[in-house]
Image 1 (tube, rainbow, N blue to C red):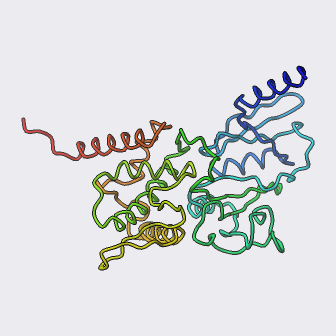
Image 2 (image 1 turned 120 degrees about the vertical axis):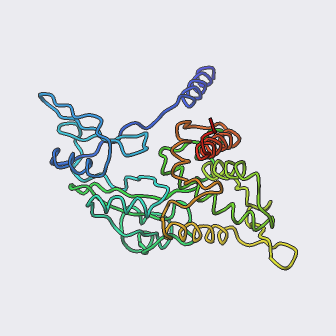
Length: 318
């Protein structure tokens, strides 16, 4: 019994050790051709090491903590055998457009008729793919697929809000300024719904933005949710009251409003409440990287807003 107890204790301590996936090895038949392809994707080349009996190349996708390696004599797997390699993006249409602009052959945006296994391959039943974004543009539901020259299969999956428990709720981080800018736009669209619900302008919007973005990333309850977590209260104009509508409808409306703003003249450069572009705000805030709370995110937002406002003021008279 003592031996079993000791073993359980040791296993518990092992579970507490951080284990970060660092590298995935893919097999290719032509190393130079593969190197050119992954370079075309815009991935960072970390290494190209040659020895007498092997060659190893490492690339890292933008914003990823995990890299890929390929080369000669580094794996016994058949070239092209890696399938369903997931790349998480915050805006799948923008990610697809980026690859198309680089001359990469990619699929149309699709979702699964049922479940999620169509991301691996197209087929019947659970593997059937349907063209277009997922209904209500739900997180985890939209995909784009492409392959390298050997047939190793990659899949973009759009994730805008994580499932509960998938992230440490005490930390919020964004891998790239583009991801943060997309989160700001979603928060802005949702905040518009919030102001409609309360029937007035919200002067404390930095805190609301921050709370929304932190909750969305952690998969926690969003500020717009009513206590039952299924409906959002929306003010009914002219009635003096409010009504509850499905959250999916609110999300869909917010998505359409954000999409309309992106397609309007000026594209993705829609101005926020102080007249600053979310892209610029995101680049500034990214220097702080990880925030321990929504309040910390709001402080960074306010600092950025104050600095931007001060920079726009005319110089003092001498």
